[in-house]
Every structure is written in C-alpha cells, then in structure tokens.
Length: 489
Figure 1 (cartoon, rainbow, N blue to C red):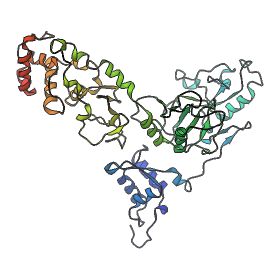
Figure 2 (cartoon, helix red, strand yellow; figure 1 turned 120 degrees about the vertical axis):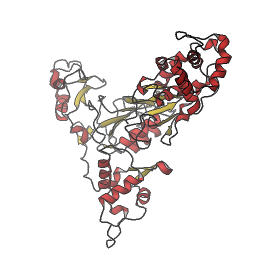
Figure 3 (tube, helix red, strand yellow; figure 1 turned 45 degrees about the vertical axis):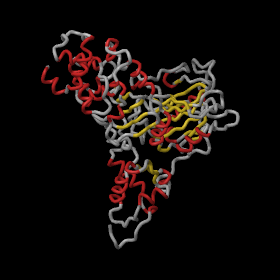
Figure 4 (cartoon, rainbow, N blue to C red; figure 1 turned 180 degrees about the vertical axis):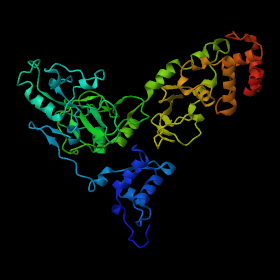
C-alpha cells in the first residue's frame, strides 16, 4: 500500500470486485467467506490503496457484510443491495397486454410451456398442434423437449382457445408457465422456486408473518400463486450440496392456518413446472436476486432429517442382537447405545436443529473441512449417523468399523457387520473399547462368540457358545486386546 495516498473508507472500496475475486478463488462456489478470505481479497483488489483499519468489522457494521457465527468460525456474506449503484439496474418487469407481470430473467429463457387456468397439467400446442396435455419429462430426447421462448408461449396463450385449436373446445384460458432447468446449473445461473403454500388469505391478501419474513429475506421477484393462498419466490441458487433430497417440503413453524391447511415451505431447483401467474407482489423486486445463501438457511431451519434416520433405526442392530436371548435377559450391550457424536473430536461440527452436522470424519467432504465452509455430508441424529454422500449410516460401532477400515463407508447400514467374521467382530469391539469413548460394560454376545472361537472354545461354524462359558468368556474379554486376537487366530 502507498503511504502517500489518502486512506479510503469502506464505501470507497469496490465491493463487487472484492466479491468476484473471492468467487474466483472458490471456483465460482458461493458460500460465506472467512475473515482471512475477505482481507486477502481486499488487499488483492486494492493493492495500491491505503485501507482503513478494521475494514471487515466496519463493513459489517455498515451493512455491507453480514456476519454469521461467533468466535473462530465467523463467516461473512455480501449483501447484494450494496452493489446496486455499481451494477446495472435490472430490467423492468415484463408486462403482457393482459397485465401479467413477469421477471425479465425468466422471460429471457426458453423455458416456457402453457397451463390451463385452474389446472396444473402443461400444454405445448406449438409442438403438439393441440391443447391436450404435453409430455415434458426426462424420458424425452432433447429434440422432443416442448418448452419454448416466452413470446411463443404468450402468443399461443392468447390465440389458442379463440382459434379453436384442436383439443381446446372445453379448455379454460391458458397462460405461460415456467419449467425450472432440467439439470442444475451453477448457483449464480440456476433459477429456484421457493413456494410458500397456504400462507395467504385470498380474500384480504394478508400474508402470515413467518412467510412475510421469508419474502423479505429473499428480496427477489415474488408473485401470488394460482390459488391465491400462496406465493412463489424466484431466486438464483440451488439446494446445498449436503442436502439429501431433491426438494425441500416442510411445514412452517406457525400454528396459524389462513385457509385451513398447514402452511408449508417448499423449495425446488430443477425439473419443476412453476405455474406462474404474473401476479407480481408490488413490494418485491422486479427481477430475480441471489438467494443461494437463503436457500441453505431455510434448509437448516426447516429440514428435519428423520426420514433417513428412521429407515436406519427400523433395522439397526438386528444382526447384533440375534443371539442375545441366551446371553442376558436384561437388554442388549451398551456398545450399541454409544452416541456417535462422542467419536467426533474435531470442532468442525455444528448443531442444526436436532442433529449434529459437518464433514464426514473419515473420508471428509468435498464441500469443505468444516460445517461453516460447506462440509456437511455427515450428520448424527438420535444416536444414528448418516453419510449423505454414500446414502449409508449406522450406530457408533459401525462408525468405528469405518475408522479402522473394517468396512468402507458405502457398505455400512443394518446388517453390515455380518460381513465380518466373528473373530474380526471381536477385534472391532476391542478396538472400540480401548481406543474410543463410551464402549464399556457388557460386550456384545457376538464379541464373546468370536473370542470363544479364537481360543478354541467354540467351533468355527458355531452361531452360539455353551451358556456355561459366559462368565469365563466375559473375564477373558476384559483382559483381551485386539493384538492378542490377531496373534492367536
């Protein structure tokens, strides 16, 4: 920096250039930036300028940046409204002759079909020659896709019924509808729809506070839905990498029900027909804004990962408890009750609702090295862990099996330990007991069976040991180690 130049203020800095520099270093991936990344980008984009002291903190207090997190995991997001004076003003609303108002960013894409008023089936008379329902799914070849440009869709919507197009005799008015892209694009190009259902009184137009808060946070083009009971918010962005489903569909937290149904938050980012109405909510912007960070926030706030966990819980430990009726009558081994969270030694995880989430502790995450930087492919909920990358999961003992290379992460799940020999199973339990937290008390029945086999007290083909050996095997297990079993077997 040049000491002979005047020190700049935070408002003198080119924050758009700073943001773009960070995106370049992240290969276009949109996520909150660290303090160090912000400072490095400022210095790289203003190498000859005197910079103000505490520039990041001042920019945050001035609303240029939004701080997320506390302490060592602080992250900062850019407020796009900061760049309004630097960026080209968005185009005005595209208004049709019948008064419908559409977002320019959507109008410029060749992603339009028609829908019948009051119905959600799509039509493409320019392709089919009629107003029967049109196929539009991924089973079609690219040259068979029915979507077209907005002007073509609008022209057909105006003349189709009036001209008596074959198939239209009993069809209501038809209007343009938008098809979200078939494959997910980069977040800055991908159009997503945040669909807030049953949150608006069609008679009064009053919107629930919880829904209005989402609309305000999105600060993007928003329209009233076809029923009048909901709203559609269109933004640029995608569902986060860690999100395990193709869409978010969850109930709002409110108990209010303006139309007698529980309000919902739904988010779609591909292969979805958006029944656009052009009934623009005047208080929202004319065009789409960046909503990538907001989508992730909403996923964190509303998504309850119970579906994946329940599938695992339903069958978890079935194979481990088969023979325990002869081992004890007072329940199974506490080895199966260890919370996998106790095995996570890093500070890279975050409590998100009822789950703990972050990067996979063994094979990591391509998203980042901690939750804040995008590493979110691993979660623990209700004492069960889930790997979103492999669609696998299990209990704490399964996780130790992955840590110690008894199993690959992709092979875990109910019954996965059946792949191990009984002696290998015993070795795994001994490693868990000696090297990890929480594995103590009565060992699993199968661990004693493997010990019996390693010591010649049960044949290799046995699926149980003599009941009279229980106390002896328990004492032997207390003094055993994994190395001893490797030596004797």
